[in-house]
Image (tube, rainbow, N blue to C red; front, side, top):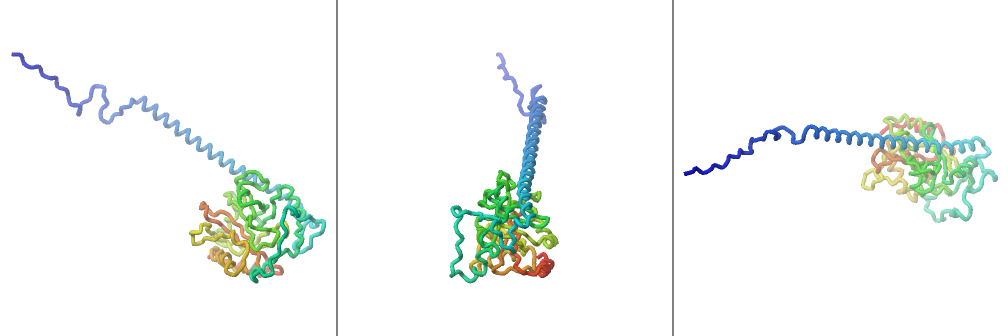
Amino acid sequence: MKKPLKRPTVPSRVGYFPENAPQEGWSSVPPERKKRKEERLRFLLEVACVAVVVICAALLIRYFADIAQAKNASEELRQTYRSGLSDPEKTVSPTESPAEEAAAPIFTADTSPEVTPPAETAAPFAAQWPTGYADNPQLRISESFQKLRQQNRDVVGWLSIEDVLDEPVMQRDNAYYLTHDASGKKNATGAPFLDESCNLRLPTPHLVIHGHNMKEGAMFGSLKKYKLKDAAFYKEHAFITFNTLYEEAQYVIYAVADVSIDAKDADYLPFWAYGTFTDQAQWDAYVGKIRELSRYRTQVDVQPGDRLLTLATCSGADNSRRLLVAARQIRKGESSLTLKQAIYSTTVK
């Protein structure tokens, strides 16, 4: 009897490797193919790095180009402005009556509303502020500003802090000069501008000027020096000159504060909303709050009836933070010695 044929024994796959099969610890990808893959990946990474470097370099070049363009635009206006100031006969002094031929009113009858005097029933508190420019009741402007407005009709003032700022101030709306320089050209550096709510045809109780906080110190970037650890910088730069279309005025800084424009924050202060003050509560809401948040403790006093000036710029990377440099106009006949004593007695809180 024939014996049954035995089924061939098939080796178990466990632990079995054909002659050319990959064994444990080996890659199933041939070494040449793996090398080509690594080279492609390395190439893509190098291309990505080069692209990032090129983009960053382009942005950096554009950043400095914008700053240079903004500085040139300001310098062109600065030369015009200074040339007008160099001739005293062409300058309206805050202590002199302007000559009849010095300048024409900035607005014509068909483009600007008449100034409406406050009602006789105005609250006594609001009546502490002047209703007109005593030295310039006819609202005439200096020759220098007339020339400036031939270059850009939006120029409304000139802001100066010795060795810190020397810039034209524009006014249109609260958006245009965030992205345009003093010549009106597109520019991320922008230009200092007066808040759209401020009406210069009246001695506005509170003027607010906005400007970008540029890292290189352009525009309002230099204001961050007021945040230094001690009060030395403030003591050396406590005075601001802000000449407008209708007056020349000096201001003294009474507070430097870092505030929030987020209503949910404890240090929220909508500084732009206080253009006028109708009662003591409203006055305290602004002046009291900004003095409370100020990094300095100063003896420079502020009283109802004082006209205020606030310079506002971004503070740090948080878009909801603002650095405010708050000043009030120097009163006629005020003692410079008393002011200097108040400034030099300032300490950091």
